[in-house]
Length: 315
Image (cartoon, rainbow, N blue to C red; front, side, top):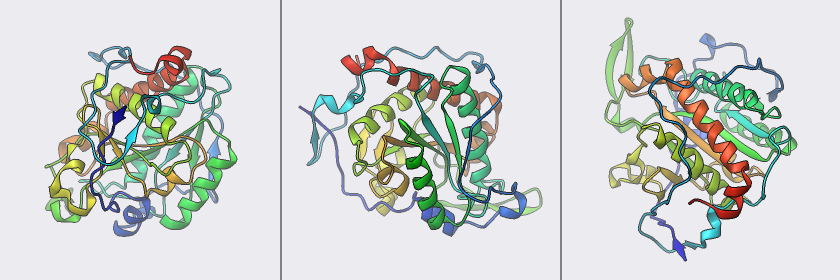
């Protein structure tokens, strides 16, 4: 029996609603959003670039789990439900977190998170399609935070996708922010934290498969040498603390997130990196980092679809 740690957690800060409502609206500087939740059906095929010095995606490895709390899962919880898939028919929805109207967090240089999310999600979509996953759909939603959540979940469910992946970029609670001036304008930053993080909801109708895919994504990020955001497991985060399901890879539980618990397919949210950290924002803005993440996500999807993974689980 494999036990997973479940710590006391009062989730709430990372939700789409909070980010959308608590950050300045940058819609005036953003591209006009679609009139309704839309799905980009076509994108030019491009060959995903492999950044110089990056390692090839590793074979699945043993995973050591954090010490446990009151909830337990069997080893089968880490195995996808389906035995295999045809990449040409396998449909993954790549969700662009937030909207032009509610742009999410602001970066250290006053750029709305939505713009970072859109660019990276688009790159992931292109890489997946170029690798044979031609049914990949890019999901763009319009509107204010809470209303847009309902629309994006409805759109994802209508597509009857096999997987749902929501793309975001991270910030920090207000108490950690400091002031500085960039390009003649006042802004706020926090260089204290950085790294990616992966979230799942135990209220998702297929939590077992969600967790399996989350593990694959996180292990790909780690294989490229990227650190995960460890702060969410620390007491200093207070009510923003989340249960850490795997201390090796940075997979967290965030049960209340609407896009994770209301979707009718396995769902994962990826915080690709921190844009409130001044140095990491520059890295996240680079094509090299975008290629690393899109290549890692594509490798995770390929492993997820592989018959050997479905039968054996992580080795």
